[in-house]
Image 1: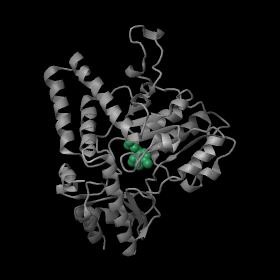
Image 2: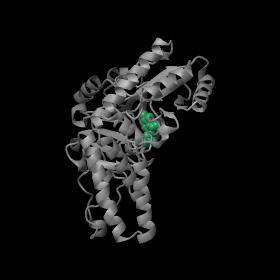
Image 3: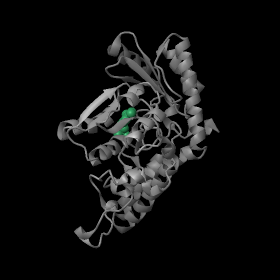
Image 4: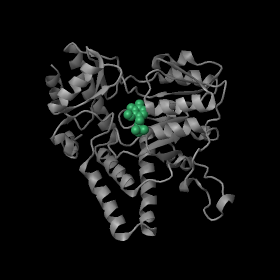
Length: 368
Ligand SMILES: Cc1ncc(COP(=O)(O)O)c(C=O)c1O
């Protein structure tokens, strides 16, 4: 792939070694142009019929792109959401869970998944059991009604033991919900091969779109068990019959109710920047660069966390959170953007295909 051409699409890289796509990917200039055109249209033409005639097909084009990336059999198995948290929330809220039911999760999940699990515990009396990600398969019991965990851990970049998780779930017909925030766009994802019931992802991280876009794939065979908690316009089957209408039979009933044309247009433009060299090539390059950063850090004596073939590299700083924040801020001043993981004394670098060896070297030089 032409790495220099990809890199040139992202203005932030002219200023800083931006290594924080795990929070939000760098935005390409093309996304700004697409969003500006959407706003120009709304401002100059108004937002009535013609506006929605742009919005609807463009939403479906974004849905098609997400579906292709996830390996979904049909675009209509994918809902457009506000992000991973939104998708996770829809699945947990849509399952008929109550007292006596148990959800098994990992003990280092992101608040975006923890929020819906906390709500299930507080509002519906569900038991939530948290164990280390690698131990989820053994934690499944006869009371388990949902396994909900990350595909790729946001703390370490470790990959969930998917074969064992799915094997433990299948015997008891338990749905598996994957939080794919650090998965989709970063590593190859094939939802059918993963064998899960639902996969929630973000558009603003490894797909470099604006905040407020994402996706939720639901396996058609599980869709009957996951009620749509808040169907919007696209979820109503027949707009001409009012309350007599049913809901659409596909994943559009899980769509978030409203998304702006600028968001959809910018997300699509960003996706197409990555699609030009190909998402597979983008992932391969990023995973390779991350592996090389991880081994350089380990060779320099940093306590790198055990990780998988992913795009995240985390290490523990001596001196806890305060020291980690100080290092993060020192690096930012030196033109290197990474993040700390509050409460852990860890730092995390997110490596994308838009980064290069020079970015990695700048991080290493600033650290030592
Ligand atoms: C593992 C994980 N889950 C969920 C989220 C939240 O994602 P979103 O902002 O798309 O809801 C993040 C983002 O930081 C994450 O790393």
